[in-house]
Length: 102
Image (cartoon, rainbow, N blue to C red):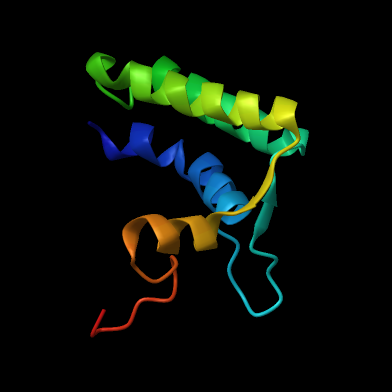
């Protein structure tokens, strides 16, 4: 895949990651899925990936599942601490808190 096409998605991917995995000492780890910005980011990222053919056609269902999950959580007005869920499910430290010994 040409790097020029792949770089088009980076700004959207970074904004999505910043929304779901906030970093920094004052960052609130609770993600408010009721915020329509997250739903728009997920939808726009999926559209861009499909339009620019940044993912193989076989993986389109993953993108649709992500957008569908974000939509469901948005409709429910869900708020969750993604980092706590990540630690509980994987037993690993939260994103951004890895050390060389982890």
